[in-house]
Length: 253
Image (cartoon, rainbow, N blue to C red; front, side):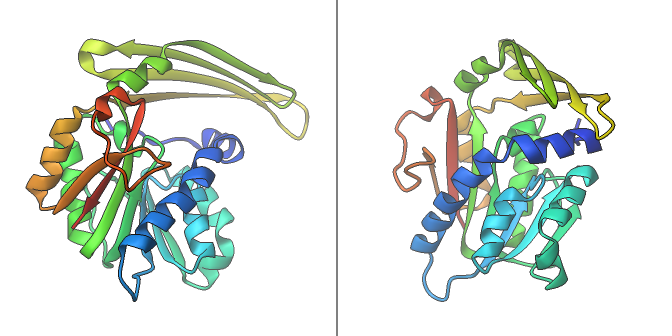
């Protein structure tokens, strides 16, 4: 079942979980611009764009960006964050499912970061996503996404509590190894302007895909080059990606 987050969670997500996007955005852009020949197509599709933090980095560097997300609440915050670029028609944010979509524009770069594609339920949905991406990617364009591995999902287990003056978050994680699936049950309480606390609840799951199957599926769809890497060295192929907690997959059309 697709995962779409509600309004309360979207606001907290925007305030608390931007560090990953801020870290990986310049690294992805640097890799892409080094690999492409002039003129570099400055067009980006951000799958699972959330509140648009990664999109903002590319917008600030002159890219035309389309953000796609299943959560209308996340997209509402993304539009607030990128308001000036929406006015200039440099950005747009659309509701859609990463597993199957069609757009009226082609892109030099398609990205899906921070576990976006781990949220898909199975390899069939992942393959459908790959086909959709392939259809909107320019020749020689790049598809860059990350995945938590089965080894990485072990960190989801257990209970954590974040207790701050304006926010309390309780995360309860369960790993079901035989299903290659991890679940996190999030309960949060955030302080409102009237000093009362309001509660929200979300359930998040990650599917750990077999990485050999991921690479084989990308090649079957038509991608000419596929390799796994760490985010700090995107151009260096990893010999044993399953041993990593998180890997980036780089596929060229």
